[in-house]
Image (cartoon, rainbow, N blue to C red; front, side, top):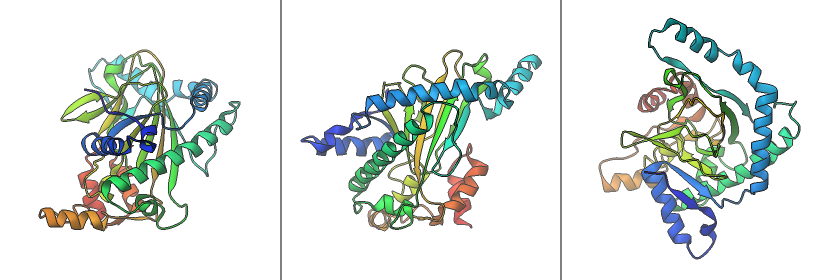
Length: 310
């Protein structure tokens, strides 16, 4: 079983209806899909791979060798207790946003990643417009909801992660199972080193590496806006004994001040079809993130309940 691979360029030709249907099915049945021919040049993607790998070697690798994950794993191996490290990840990660400090020692890193983020943000907005259309919402509905109205207030962040080779991958997670808190996530993953898996029908399935594809997944806020039509999906990264997995995940999230609720069109429709009005609360995204910070690796349903009580 493999997650759907969709040719995004066919959205703009004779196969538009078929491609819309493929994306609708991927959102409803899988919550994860891969886009090829997505409009981001291979030349840019090759540069992103190069600067990300160089940045890890130059600015991150030494720090990881002295990290809590490495120290704790070494301690656990010495103990020979058979326990697993449950509360941390075998991951080196940093965030790029419009208003934080970026790594500065790697030649070309800032320029390349700024260009990449600009292209990815456009792709995210295109994907959200497709979701609008498939859900029967006005064009630009999701973008407007995330921005808290007109304007450009949504948060667009990029997590640059590496999962270095792990001497005891059976004792630690690369990244613990979780669903994503935000909106639409766009992942540029390693084309050689696997490890990403999604939970489908109670079974962990590999997200197959595919050169220069962009993996799309839906976060908790899309689940709320769609009134449960598009679910956020549990996923994890397994540590591996060889290969340094590169993973660059960008996420188009609501502004912290944005109010998120099921789209009226969808909760009213659900109401007419079954006794199922809005299944989700209305809340301010910043409040949701406060709950998520404490409960990221726990089931999502209590998060919705907690934010409903606020």
